[in-house]
Image (spheres, helix red, strand yellow):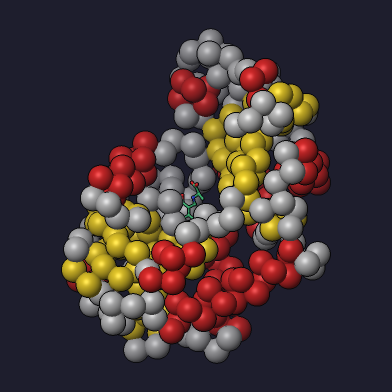
Length: 288
Ligand code: PDD
């Protein structure tokens, strides 16, 4: 981060180097918190209501009281992007239970820690979007509350590190023989014109996943939220990933073996076209 960067910390925009939290913050000690990554296009947050819904839902599930109203969170996201002149990029939002002497049970009367960081980004590598990417498979070793977007991401980090060490774009997580999602993205396959993705059953209720399911259905494509076994996934006509930082990314190989035609397929391309169209509408000042 450059010196001029400002971080949102508990209601204030402070210089990056001055943004400090306690060594007893429960996010640090217990990964006791949640986060969001919001895409910014033309200075505006994309799909912000869906992000706010998930953020509020996660805080409720963990019994962390949001220190701001929903509207104030929305305003703060826009403000931190603007203060850092991030027209195109992301805002990372993290809420933890706050600082308290280390003790497992929820402490009472503690003020939560809310942090927001804006980062410029032009989105995924255009060449990767055009040519498609390679995946490795990894066991889904996460816990039973994957519906909550917690900062407890070590299993995802280990799986993704494995993917990077194999020069791959993402790790495809597999639980009981069924593909669940990526380490930081959702996974889809297409067979005979029908799109399949794992139901929201111990996976992340991704904003981009939901957006794409609705957009493809509105476009006349059949989408089924059903688990697909890895062997069927590998044999699908098309495979793609989705996510805030992934957009709609075609997959051309898994574990070194080509999948589908070896090129980004037509349903994937259509998905990306729809996504770009709606991102552009946000950029132009339309629906957020
Ligand atoms: N990750 N699945 C997992 C496990 C994720 O961590 C993410 C997002 C997604 C896609 O969700 P969404 O469409 O809401 O971004 C799916 C974020 C970007 C991250 O951890 O950086």
